Length: 201
Image 1: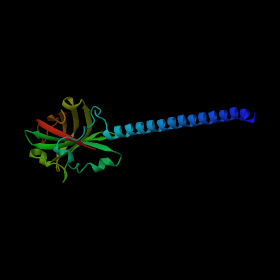
Image 2: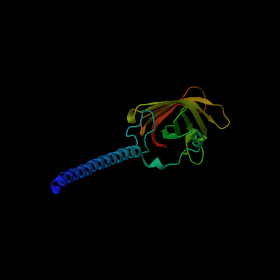
Image 3: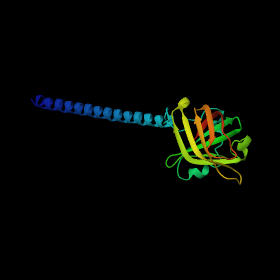
């Protein structure tokens, strides 16, 4: 009689223990699943950050291309870095009158600028450009790759001479054409030819 009374209670306790174990197993599976999903999401985010954008915004510098990608930046570049990150687009212009390098600075904030760099880190210009420096704070850019274009407005000058207002038009990346048009009298004459480019930063 005593054994018949205790058996239902024992079976009920056993079933309760089994159900509790099942609940714990389901809870562990949910926890493990959530952790696994979180790791996958974090991994995808890190991968996307490391890969970077595949299509840079119109007007922004493209990723470095060609053997010049490891070239040292312009000697004038550090003075633009104080306010934040700055990307630099380098253009080597091969004209009928001579060769010259133009560098466009793309800061995260603030105005874009361009220079004809001088100094030990710059590409040595030839022809009339060998005696010139230049800069400007008017930079218009747009398009992508072969349709990319830039219009730079500013001044050039020879050492000790007056400034000469110029407009520089670039077309195509990483290779394309250029036209330099002085808008006032001076030592620089209209020039055109081919150009190639790369970016840093």
